[in-house]
Image 1 (spheres, helix red, strand yellow):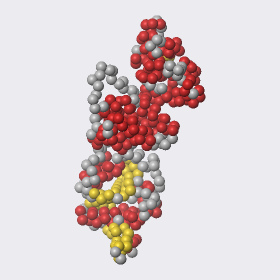
Image 2: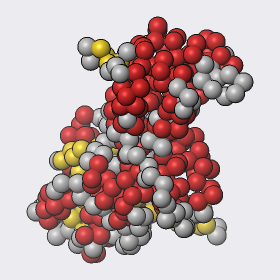
Image 3: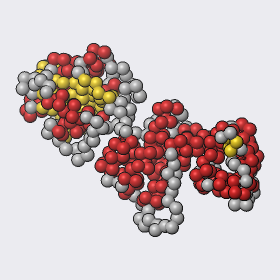
Length: 410
Protein backbone atom coordinates (compact mmCIF):
# COMPACT_ATOMS: atom_id res chain seq x y z
CA UNK A 1 0.00 0.00 0.00
CA UNK A 2 1.21 3.50 -0.84
CA UNK A 3 -0.20 6.64 0.72
CA UNK A 4 0.89 9.74 -1.12
CA UNK A 5 -0.06 13.00 -2.71
CA UNK A 6 2.84 13.01 -5.16
CA UNK A 7 4.52 9.71 -5.87
CA UNK A 8 6.15 11.07 -9.03
CA UNK A 9 5.53 13.67 -11.69
CA UNK A 10 4.56 11.21 -14.42
CA UNK A 11 0.94 11.60 -15.47
CA UNK A 12 -1.37 9.64 -17.73
CA UNK A 13 -1.64 10.83 -21.34
CA UNK A 14 -5.13 10.12 -22.54
CA UNK A 15 -5.62 8.22 -25.81
CA UNK A 16 -8.96 9.76 -26.72
CA UNK A 17 -11.16 11.37 -24.06
CA UNK A 18 -11.17 8.69 -21.33
CA UNK A 19 -9.55 10.96 -18.73
CA UNK A 20 -11.99 13.80 -19.44
CA UNK A 21 -14.92 11.38 -19.16
CA UNK A 22 -13.76 9.85 -15.88
CA UNK A 23 -12.83 13.16 -14.23
CA UNK A 24 -16.26 14.51 -15.17
CA UNK A 25 -17.92 11.38 -13.79
CA UNK A 26 -16.10 11.78 -10.45
CA UNK A 27 -16.85 15.52 -10.31
CA UNK A 28 -20.56 14.79 -10.68
CA UNK A 29 -20.69 11.80 -8.33
CA UNK A 30 -22.81 12.32 -5.21
CA UNK A 31 -21.26 13.24 -1.88
CA UNK A 32 -21.69 10.83 0.99
CA UNK A 33 -21.30 7.93 -1.43
CA UNK A 34 -18.51 5.53 -2.33
CA UNK A 35 -18.11 5.44 -6.12
CA UNK A 36 -16.65 2.27 -7.67
CA UNK A 37 -14.87 2.32 -11.05
CA UNK A 38 -13.28 -0.68 -12.79
CA UNK A 39 -10.44 -0.45 -15.32
CA UNK A 40 -9.72 -3.57 -17.37
CA UNK A 41 -7.35 -4.34 -20.23
CA UNK A 42 -4.03 -5.99 -21.07
CA UNK A 43 -0.99 -5.59 -18.78
CA UNK A 44 1.09 -2.42 -19.00
CA UNK A 45 -1.49 -0.11 -20.58
CA UNK A 46 -1.41 2.52 -17.81
CA UNK A 47 -4.47 1.55 -15.75
CA UNK A 48 -2.79 2.31 -12.41
CA UNK A 49 -1.20 5.47 -13.78
CA UNK A 50 -4.61 6.67 -14.96
CA UNK A 51 -6.04 6.08 -11.47
CA UNK A 52 -3.14 7.97 -9.84
CA UNK A 53 -3.47 10.84 -12.32
CA UNK A 54 -7.17 11.14 -11.51
CA UNK A 55 -6.34 11.35 -7.80
CA UNK A 56 -3.73 14.05 -8.48
CA UNK A 57 -6.22 15.96 -10.63
CA UNK A 58 -8.57 16.18 -7.62
CA UNK A 59 -5.61 17.02 -5.33
CA UNK A 60 -6.51 13.94 -3.33
CA UNK A 61 -4.50 11.48 -1.30
CA UNK A 62 -4.68 7.91 -2.54
CA UNK A 63 -4.05 4.48 -1.09
CA UNK A 64 -2.73 1.75 -3.38
CA UNK A 65 -3.53 -1.87 -2.46
CA UNK A 66 -1.89 -4.62 -4.53
CA UNK A 67 -4.31 -7.51 -4.81
CA UNK A 68 -3.08 -11.02 -4.12
CA UNK A 69 -4.58 -14.36 -3.02
CA UNK A 70 -2.87 -13.83 0.37
CA UNK A 71 -4.66 -10.56 1.08
CA UNK A 72 -6.77 -10.88 4.21
CA UNK A 73 -9.74 -8.83 5.40
CA UNK A 74 -7.66 -7.62 8.33
CA UNK A 75 -5.02 -6.33 5.90
CA UNK A 76 -7.71 -4.10 4.42
CA UNK A 77 -9.56 -3.02 7.56
CA UNK A 78 -6.95 -3.17 10.32
CA UNK A 79 -5.58 -5.50 12.99
CA UNK A 80 -4.43 -5.60 16.61
CA UNK A 81 -0.71 -5.67 17.42
CA UNK A 82 1.07 -6.50 20.67
CA UNK A 83 3.29 -3.56 21.58
CA UNK A 84 5.29 -2.80 24.76
CA UNK A 85 3.17 -5.03 26.93
CA UNK A 86 -0.11 -3.72 25.52
CA UNK A 87 -2.14 -3.81 22.35
CA UNK A 88 -2.47 -1.27 19.57
CA UNK A 89 -4.94 -1.26 16.67
CA UNK A 90 -3.35 -0.55 13.30
CA UNK A 91 -5.94 0.89 10.92
CA UNK A 92 -5.87 -0.59 7.41
CA UNK A 93 -6.03 1.30 4.10
CA UNK A 94 -9.84 1.17 3.90
CA UNK A 95 -10.35 2.77 7.32
CA UNK A 96 -7.54 5.27 6.70
CA UNK A 97 -9.08 6.24 3.35
CA UNK A 98 -12.49 6.82 4.97
CA UNK A 99 -10.83 9.04 7.61
CA UNK A 100 -8.96 11.00 4.93
CA UNK A 101 -12.13 11.47 2.87
CA UNK A 102 -14.00 12.69 5.96
CA UNK A 103 -11.22 15.16 6.80
CA UNK A 104 -10.36 16.42 3.30
CA UNK A 105 -13.60 15.87 1.39
CA UNK A 106 -12.29 13.25 -1.05
CA UNK A 107 -9.94 10.27 -1.13
CA UNK A 108 -9.05 7.52 -3.62
CA UNK A 109 -8.46 3.81 -3.06
CA UNK A 110 -6.67 2.04 -5.95
CA UNK A 111 -7.01 -1.75 -5.92
CA UNK A 112 -4.47 -3.20 -8.34
CA UNK A 113 -5.23 -6.66 -9.78
CA UNK A 114 -8.56 -6.68 -7.99
CA UNK A 115 -9.37 -10.09 -9.49
CA UNK A 116 -6.36 -11.55 -7.65
CA UNK A 117 -8.20 -11.00 -4.33
CA UNK A 118 -9.95 -14.13 -3.05
CA UNK A 119 -13.71 -14.14 -3.51
CA UNK A 120 -14.18 -14.51 0.25
CA UNK A 121 -12.25 -11.26 0.79
CA UNK A 122 -14.10 -9.38 -1.96
CA UNK A 123 -17.14 -9.49 0.33
CA UNK A 124 -15.45 -7.12 2.78
CA UNK A 125 -15.65 -4.38 0.15
CA UNK A 126 -19.35 -4.91 -0.59
CA UNK A 127 -20.67 -2.83 2.31
CA UNK A 128 -18.22 -0.02 1.51
CA UNK A 129 -19.31 0.16 -2.14
CA UNK A 130 -23.04 -0.19 -1.52
CA UNK A 131 -23.62 1.22 1.99
CA UNK A 132 -20.64 3.60 2.38
CA UNK A 133 -19.31 1.98 5.55
CA UNK A 134 -17.30 -0.99 6.81
CA UNK A 135 -17.65 -3.06 9.95
CA UNK A 136 -14.30 -3.84 11.56
CA UNK A 137 -14.36 -7.53 12.46
CA UNK A 138 -11.27 -7.10 14.67
CA UNK A 139 -13.03 -4.42 16.75
CA UNK A 140 -16.32 -6.16 17.42
CA UNK A 141 -17.81 -5.02 14.09
CA UNK A 142 -17.30 -1.36 14.97
CA UNK A 143 -18.82 0.78 12.20
CA UNK A 144 -16.59 3.09 10.18
CA UNK A 145 -18.67 5.36 7.93
CA UNK A 146 -18.25 7.96 5.19
CA UNK A 147 -19.68 11.40 6.07
CA UNK A 148 -22.49 12.86 3.97
CA UNK A 149 -20.28 15.66 2.60
CA UNK A 150 -17.37 13.36 1.62
CA UNK A 151 -16.48 11.33 -1.48
CA UNK A 152 -14.60 8.05 -1.59
CA UNK A 153 -13.52 6.82 -5.03
CA UNK A 154 -12.59 3.11 -5.28
CA UNK A 155 -10.80 2.22 -8.54
CA UNK A 156 -10.12 -1.43 -9.27
CA UNK A 157 -7.73 -2.52 -12.05
CA UNK A 158 -7.71 -5.95 -13.67
CA UNK A 159 -6.38 -7.75 -16.71
CA UNK A 160 -9.81 -8.96 -17.78
CA UNK A 161 -9.59 -11.68 -20.40
CA UNK A 162 -5.79 -11.67 -20.30
CA UNK A 163 -4.57 -12.62 -16.84
CA UNK A 164 -7.21 -13.41 -14.23
CA UNK A 165 -6.51 -15.29 -11.02
CA UNK A 166 -10.01 -15.17 -9.54
CA UNK A 167 -13.36 -14.31 -11.03
CA UNK A 168 -15.03 -11.24 -9.57
CA UNK A 169 -18.21 -12.14 -7.74
CA UNK A 170 -21.16 -10.90 -9.78
CA UNK A 171 -22.63 -9.02 -6.80
CA UNK A 172 -19.24 -7.41 -6.12
CA UNK A 173 -18.60 -6.42 -9.76
CA UNK A 174 -22.13 -5.02 -10.02
CA UNK A 175 -21.30 -2.49 -7.27
CA UNK A 176 -18.83 -0.75 -9.58
CA UNK A 177 -20.88 1.77 -11.56
CA UNK A 178 -18.45 2.03 -14.51
CA UNK A 179 -16.28 -0.56 -16.27
CA UNK A 180 -13.77 1.15 -18.61
CA UNK A 181 -11.50 -0.70 -21.03
CA UNK A 182 -7.94 0.67 -21.21
CA UNK A 183 -6.22 -0.83 -24.23
CA UNK A 184 -2.90 -0.27 -26.02
CA UNK A 185 -2.75 3.13 -27.73
CA UNK A 186 -2.59 3.62 -31.48
CA UNK A 187 0.97 3.74 -32.84
CA UNK A 188 1.24 7.53 -33.10
CA UNK A 189 -0.09 8.02 -29.57
CA UNK A 190 2.15 5.28 -28.16
CA UNK A 191 5.20 7.05 -29.63
CA UNK A 192 4.01 10.34 -28.13
CA UNK A 193 3.54 8.71 -24.69
CA UNK A 194 7.00 7.11 -24.84
CA UNK A 195 8.71 10.39 -25.77
CA UNK A 196 6.81 12.36 -23.13
CA UNK A 197 7.63 10.01 -20.25
CA UNK A 198 11.19 8.97 -21.14
CA UNK A 199 12.50 12.09 -22.87
CA UNK A 200 14.02 9.96 -25.65
CA UNK A 201 14.10 11.26 -29.23
CA UNK A 202 11.30 10.56 -31.68
CA UNK A 203 13.27 8.06 -33.76
CA UNK A 204 14.19 5.85 -30.79
CA UNK A 205 10.55 5.84 -29.61
CA UNK A 206 9.40 4.99 -33.13
CA UNK A 207 11.87 2.09 -33.54
CA UNK A 208 10.93 0.53 -30.18
CA UNK A 209 7.18 1.02 -30.58
CA UNK A 210 7.28 -0.43 -34.10
CA UNK A 211 9.04 -3.60 -32.89
CA UNK A 212 6.75 -3.85 -29.84
CA UNK A 213 3.63 -3.72 -31.98
CA UNK A 214 4.92 -6.47 -34.26
CA UNK A 215 5.71 -8.71 -31.27
CA UNK A 216 2.32 -7.83 -29.77
CA UNK A 217 0.68 -8.93 -33.02
CA UNK A 218 2.39 -12.32 -32.77
CA UNK A 219 1.08 -12.74 -29.23
CA UNK A 220 -2.48 -11.53 -29.79
CA UNK A 221 -3.21 -12.78 -33.32
CA UNK A 222 -0.88 -15.72 -33.96
CA UNK A 223 -0.55 -17.00 -30.35
CA UNK A 224 3.11 -17.89 -31.01
CA UNK A 225 4.03 -15.87 -27.90
CA UNK A 226 2.35 -15.97 -24.50
CA UNK A 227 3.58 -12.60 -23.19
CA UNK A 228 2.87 -9.17 -24.60
CA UNK A 229 5.29 -6.29 -25.27
CA UNK A 230 3.39 -3.74 -23.18
CA UNK A 231 3.54 0.06 -23.25
CA UNK A 232 5.10 -0.15 -19.77
CA UNK A 233 7.94 -2.30 -21.14
CA UNK A 234 8.46 0.12 -24.04
CA UNK A 235 8.84 3.00 -21.58
CA UNK A 236 11.17 1.09 -19.24
CA UNK A 237 13.35 -0.05 -22.15
CA UNK A 238 13.60 3.44 -23.67
CA UNK A 239 14.44 4.93 -20.26
CA UNK A 240 17.29 2.45 -19.73
CA UNK A 241 18.86 2.57 -23.22
CA UNK A 242 18.71 6.37 -23.28
CA UNK A 243 20.77 6.55 -20.07
CA UNK A 244 23.24 3.70 -20.52
CA UNK A 245 26.24 3.58 -22.90
CA UNK A 246 25.41 2.13 -26.33
CA UNK A 247 27.89 -0.72 -25.71
CA UNK A 248 25.30 -2.30 -23.38
CA UNK A 249 22.47 -2.16 -25.91
CA UNK A 250 22.74 -5.87 -26.78
CA UNK A 251 22.58 -6.76 -23.06
CA UNK A 252 19.47 -4.62 -22.61
CA UNK A 253 17.74 -6.17 -25.63
CA UNK A 254 18.48 -9.65 -24.30
CA UNK A 255 17.61 -8.99 -20.66
CA UNK A 256 14.71 -6.54 -21.00
CA UNK A 257 12.96 -7.87 -24.10
CA UNK A 258 13.93 -11.39 -25.14
CA UNK A 259 14.25 -12.93 -21.66
CA UNK A 260 11.13 -11.14 -20.37
CA UNK A 261 8.87 -12.03 -23.29
CA UNK A 262 10.02 -15.57 -24.04
CA UNK A 263 9.87 -18.62 -21.76
CA UNK A 264 10.87 -21.28 -24.30
CA UNK A 265 13.55 -21.53 -26.97
CA UNK A 266 10.86 -21.41 -29.67
CA UNK A 267 9.47 -18.18 -28.24
CA UNK A 268 12.97 -16.70 -28.05
CA UNK A 269 13.51 -17.55 -31.72
CA UNK A 270 10.23 -15.84 -32.62
CA UNK A 271 11.16 -12.65 -30.75
CA UNK A 272 14.70 -12.61 -32.18
CA UNK A 273 13.37 -13.09 -35.73
CA UNK A 274 11.06 -10.11 -35.38
CA UNK A 275 13.80 -7.90 -33.93
CA UNK A 276 16.26 -8.97 -36.63
CA UNK A 277 13.65 -8.39 -39.33
CA UNK A 278 13.16 -4.86 -38.03
CA UNK A 279 16.96 -4.32 -37.87
CA UNK A 280 16.19 -3.32 -34.29
CA UNK A 281 19.68 -3.28 -32.79
CA UNK A 282 21.30 -1.70 -35.86
CA UNK A 283 18.82 1.18 -36.01
CA UNK A 284 19.01 1.85 -32.28
CA UNK A 285 22.81 1.81 -32.34
CA UNK A 286 22.78 4.44 -35.07
CA UNK A 287 20.46 6.66 -33.01
CA UNK A 288 22.23 6.12 -29.69
CA UNK A 289 25.77 6.52 -31.01
CA UNK A 290 27.33 9.65 -29.41
CA UNK A 291 28.84 10.65 -32.75
CA UNK A 292 26.59 9.99 -35.70
CA UNK A 293 28.53 9.25 -38.86
CA UNK A 294 28.39 12.02 -41.39
CA UNK A 295 28.04 9.22 -43.71
CA UNK A 296 28.17 9.02 -47.31
CA UNK A 297 26.70 5.61 -46.66
CA UNK A 298 23.09 5.08 -47.56
CA UNK A 299 20.64 5.42 -44.68
CA UNK A 300 19.08 2.25 -43.35
CA UNK A 301 16.11 1.29 -45.48
CA UNK A 302 12.81 1.33 -43.66
CA UNK A 303 11.26 -2.13 -43.57
CA UNK A 304 7.51 -2.35 -43.98
CA UNK A 305 5.27 -4.62 -41.93
CA UNK A 306 4.75 -6.85 -44.99
CA UNK A 307 8.52 -7.19 -45.50
CA UNK A 308 8.94 -8.03 -41.82
CA UNK A 309 6.36 -10.81 -42.11
CA UNK A 310 8.16 -12.19 -45.18
CA UNK A 311 11.54 -12.13 -43.40
CA UNK A 312 10.11 -13.84 -40.32
CA UNK A 313 8.56 -16.57 -42.47
CA UNK A 314 11.79 -17.07 -44.41
CA UNK A 315 13.81 -17.32 -41.19
CA UNK A 316 11.43 -20.00 -39.99
CA UNK A 317 12.12 -21.95 -43.21
CA UNK A 318 15.87 -21.55 -42.65
CA UNK A 319 15.46 -23.07 -39.17
CA UNK A 320 13.39 -25.92 -40.62
CA UNK A 321 16.09 -26.62 -43.24
CA UNK A 322 18.88 -26.61 -40.64
CA UNK A 323 16.93 -29.03 -38.42
CA UNK A 324 16.44 -31.39 -41.37
CA UNK A 325 19.85 -31.20 -43.07
CA UNK A 326 22.26 -29.41 -40.71
CA UNK A 327 23.97 -26.03 -40.95
CA UNK A 328 26.84 -27.48 -43.02
CA UNK A 329 24.33 -27.98 -45.87
CA UNK A 330 23.31 -24.32 -45.76
CA UNK A 331 26.61 -22.60 -46.60
CA UNK A 332 29.79 -24.04 -48.09
CA UNK A 333 33.39 -23.81 -46.84
CA UNK A 334 33.64 -20.32 -48.39
CA UNK A 335 30.55 -19.23 -46.42
CA UNK A 336 28.46 -18.95 -49.59
CA UNK A 337 24.81 -20.02 -49.61
CA UNK A 338 24.45 -23.47 -51.20
CA UNK A 339 22.12 -24.05 -54.16
CA UNK A 340 20.73 -27.13 -52.42
CA UNK A 341 19.10 -24.84 -49.85
CA UNK A 342 17.63 -22.48 -52.48
CA UNK A 343 16.25 -25.36 -54.55
CA UNK A 344 14.78 -26.97 -51.42
CA UNK A 345 12.86 -23.72 -50.82
CA UNK A 346 11.70 -23.77 -54.45
CA UNK A 347 10.43 -27.34 -54.15
CA UNK A 348 8.87 -27.15 -50.67
CA UNK A 349 8.06 -23.49 -49.91
CA UNK A 350 7.85 -21.88 -53.32
CA UNK A 351 5.34 -19.13 -52.46
CA UNK A 352 7.40 -17.99 -49.47
CA UNK A 353 10.59 -17.97 -51.58
CA UNK A 354 8.94 -16.01 -54.41
CA UNK A 355 7.61 -13.34 -52.02
CA UNK A 356 11.11 -13.01 -50.57
CA UNK A 357 12.86 -12.84 -53.98
CA UNK A 358 10.33 -10.21 -55.04
CA UNK A 359 12.07 -7.90 -52.52
CA UNK A 360 15.17 -7.85 -54.79
CA UNK A 361 13.24 -5.48 -57.06
CA UNK A 362 13.89 -2.71 -54.52
CA UNK A 363 17.60 -3.06 -55.29
CA UNK A 364 17.08 -3.07 -59.10
CA UNK A 365 18.64 -6.51 -59.53
CA UNK A 366 15.88 -7.40 -62.01
CA UNK A 367 16.87 -4.45 -64.22
CA UNK A 368 20.47 -5.69 -64.37
CA UNK A 369 19.11 -9.14 -65.22
CA UNK A 370 17.01 -7.78 -68.08
CA UNK A 371 19.97 -5.91 -69.56
CA UNK A 372 22.26 -8.94 -69.41
CA UNK A 373 19.86 -11.77 -70.30
CA UNK A 374 17.40 -9.79 -72.44
CA UNK A 375 14.50 -11.46 -70.65
CA UNK A 376 12.04 -10.36 -67.99
CA UNK A 377 12.47 -11.80 -64.48
CA UNK A 378 8.77 -12.80 -64.29
CA UNK A 379 6.39 -14.98 -66.27
CA UNK A 380 2.65 -14.35 -65.88
CA UNK A 381 3.52 -12.16 -62.90
CA UNK A 382 5.50 -14.91 -61.15
CA UNK A 383 9.26 -14.77 -60.42
CA UNK A 384 11.06 -17.32 -62.62
CA UNK A 385 13.51 -19.98 -61.47
CA UNK A 386 15.87 -18.74 -64.20
CA UNK A 387 16.05 -15.33 -62.48
CA UNK A 388 16.76 -16.98 -59.09
CA UNK A 389 19.55 -19.07 -60.68
CA UNK A 390 21.01 -15.92 -62.22
CA UNK A 391 21.04 -14.20 -58.80
CA UNK A 392 22.81 -17.24 -57.36
CA UNK A 393 25.41 -17.65 -60.14
CA UNK A 394 26.22 -13.98 -60.78
CA UNK A 395 29.83 -12.89 -60.30
CA UNK A 396 28.65 -10.27 -57.82
CA UNK A 397 26.99 -12.97 -55.64
CA UNK A 398 23.71 -11.02 -55.64
CA UNK A 399 21.72 -13.73 -53.85
CA UNK A 400 24.36 -14.18 -51.16
CA UNK A 401 24.53 -10.42 -50.52
CA UNK A 402 20.75 -10.18 -50.51
CA UNK A 403 20.24 -13.02 -48.05
CA UNK A 404 22.97 -11.92 -45.67
CA UNK A 405 22.99 -8.13 -45.77
CA UNK A 406 20.14 -6.45 -47.66
CA UNK A 407 17.19 -8.55 -46.46
CA UNK A 408 18.99 -10.78 -43.97
CA UNK A 409 17.64 -14.23 -43.14
CA UNK A 410 20.94 -16.01 -42.35
